[in-house]
Length: 472
Ligand SMILES: CC(C)[C@H](C(=O)O)[C@@H](O)C(=O)O
Ligand code: SF4
Image (cartoon, rainbow, N blue to C red; front, side, top):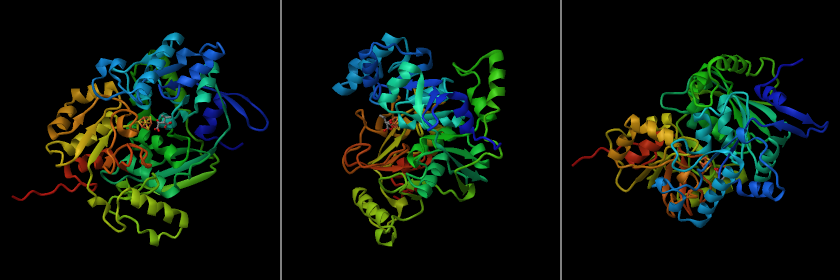
């Protein structure tokens, strides 16, 4: 018998039933919900007069369309009628079904993919779903975590199971060490530039190798978060001491004797040496450059030191056309240095990069500098707890002294469903994960980068982050 991958192990442990042609039913250990993708799901339940099967395995937050200022004013302070309606509907639904909810303004509230791990609700070996594609983030703990659609949200609410089909196994092996200053964000974007946005389609990606083992949990979450942008619904990292250290003592983590038992189970969660892989990608850690997207797709990513592609030099006709269009939308000139592009805005936040380590990395660059003239920089912590801890460490002071805006938690300008948006034509260095046309506001231009590069862009005014030497 051949060995199993980590994905195979979690799948097998959660299989309730499977037909011979592969239609399976999986038990779901944790269902995360937010205001945008649940209203119809609850409405469907109510129409059929069904209860929520396991409110105890469900956790709700309000994150996508919450404003990032004056959250203390509550829903009353939300002016957009659609946003307000979604927030009110969620509050009503969680109350009716006895679901734990961290409302806007609660210190524990924040972006769903920051809150689950922070609370210790996300645990190794679990199956985790949410009506949100970046649920892949939670795979950093060695849990099978992926996004689902609204009709599936209704199904999980009603039954605590999910209809699923087994995906394929892809291994991404990263050997050696990442160069100094190169982060999980650079690695994720670099990988997508190699495999493309469809490269992981139909697969679960397991990240492994020395460079992955060396990542902290924040880095692993960043990388797993980006799996969906590479086409894979889920990403995984096998749990290890780094995982257990992060989890220990978190509110929902197992306590006392249960902790030891949990850890000994979690230690069985790895891919066997003789596991079968459908696809293997190998990357040398040393060769991963600081990476930035220049276009309107996460795969249009290049080293920060590169120049904007010249479409005529691209052989593949589909890619050539895509590059032409992206260059036009992004207001670029073929052949110009990416590092020299001037930015108008900087956004440090989103479920990709809004955790404490991300803010620390940004603060390290910004400390003692001022935001460049004409640049507006917004720092949006991923949760109220991240915000409070950052303040306890004085990071907010570093940011505000430099002239950055220090905001309250939420998805914010990652997708601009709240008042935080780009103006048409504005160029933004953003630590988020999507850069398609209009993502951060109509005609806004997004360059996806690490917190380190974003912070340097804020103080230098250019993507490449060279702080101008002032001569007077
Ligand atoms: C609103 C939600 C459905 C969406 C997603 O699933 O990813 C959002 O979080 C995003 O990042 O675009
Ligand atoms: S921060 Fe962005 S990517 Fe993450 S859940 Fe919110 S909108 Fe989606």
